[in-house]
Length: 450
Ligand code: URA
Image: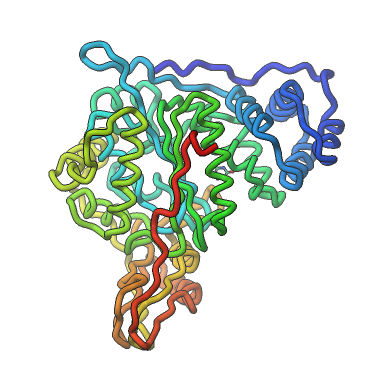
């Protein structure tokens, strides 16, 4: 892989005025390519001040952007840093090996990357999965994997390429060199109430994925209480915008819209999510986690032209598990080592019997976070053993007194606040009738749908 550097795109300070560009967007106008390139380059350099970029972000949130503007904004953020190139990956007969990647907009109990990357890799497709740490109520893939004794998130570009070549699967930390403009802008949006702008979310996510240089990309866009986008409409718009950006950049991009009303699987935390992922890799595990893993694997494989396999097969026959063990060991982890256990646990039981009709994802995410599984500030550490085990999901029957949740933490004093987060998180229909459940897969958007 050659990280081809374009670090810090050049700009002429006198070419435009930030105030004029802010006024253009504030009044609903369109920014030209040259204006966008200038704004991003001058902001990355520090010539455009944070307060000016904040005003621009707010104008974008209120006025929106055209497809062309979002595309150029994304390209300018890519040009602010290095890009990666996996074209040196070849088969024995010299053909290019196309890479496939996945991005999830984040949800509670979303451990899918863990079984998914080795599953797709078990078909010989390289998966360069650059991931992040969690902030807030949704966990980060690296936090989960760091629960495995010895596992190392940081790889050099050379180590990453060598591992992709030999094992096909890599999950590691995204280096600071990819889209540094986004890093700066995202931190600013976080404190100026401008995270929620769809053009800014889409360009932020896609600048990093396009800079990473993957050939195919599958987006898992979550919708519902535990998701970033609470409504189906907003999730669809975000998905369309990202598919358009990927397509315009030559990345074969599709999006699945998936429900995040209720957590995925029966665990939300770090080590306990690894444990559940291992169940899936061993051919078992909760039905929703298996379904989503298989559907996303199917999309990723199709994205690089592999359409003649059933991805469920390599979960059943152990090949995905073999791929996992090699991937973990290559990054210093011991796949056989016991996972860390929390020092304290507390069980919450059902007050009445009946059918569980609702289990709120956001409440479970908040409880896991309060137990120590997540962080409030970037510099915080997370507890490997903390989290929430769920004993019943929507559609299940429970009896009064039956366990609904087990709360896990190293700090007993965290339990009361976590319990508070779960007040009202579960609805039980005492008549015991069947529950109406939204389907996990809610939609699919491809370049043809744009
Ligand atoms: N994730 C990102 O990387 N960027 C956003 O703006 C939102 C989520």
